[in-house]
Length: 199
Image 1 (cartoon, helix red, strand yellow):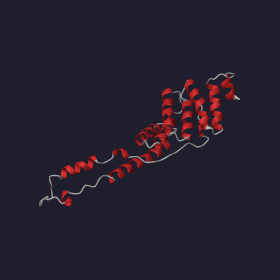
Image 2 (cartoon, helix red, strand yellow):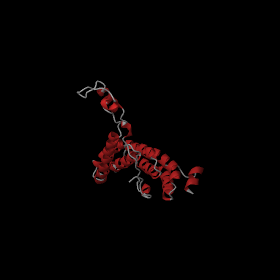
Image 3 (tube, helix red, strand yellow):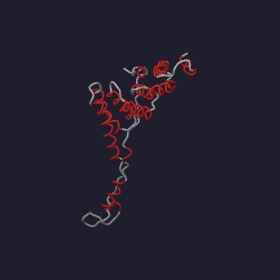
Image 4 (cartoon, helix red, strand yellow):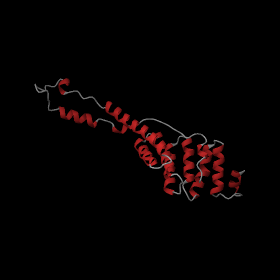
């Protein structure tokens, strides 16, 4: 009835009515249908809380890029009661999207807030281990360069060949430093998207 009233113009499409419709769809686990009214409500709202709610909907659908963009909009718009929690959610989105350095930065910011310090610290330790492991794996996967003597070159009695330094340089340039990432995914609990209101 609320949806038809908004469509027919019998109910004013203000923040309150649009938010209510979005909440109804969230309660029904119809997350895709909650996006449109919440997007409109978030644009009309004076603070960023509804952008957080909308981001949680996208997190439920594992749409991490969309969720992180909305969380940044929430921070930009301001008026949030718990910015530390937004940084924590942002870190989870980055982590789930395999953007480890960005995740680390967000968890560091979340750690500055008392409400999220403990959970952010736990996430930060996990991300640091992931980054270290990825760096180790990257080093282990770097090309193996044989000494010129092992390739049949005549290096003389000293064992030092003129071409050895250039071979080492080639090995360093061959390391793929862009591959330092790991795969993970974490969504919010099914009913958590309904808990982030304007309060």
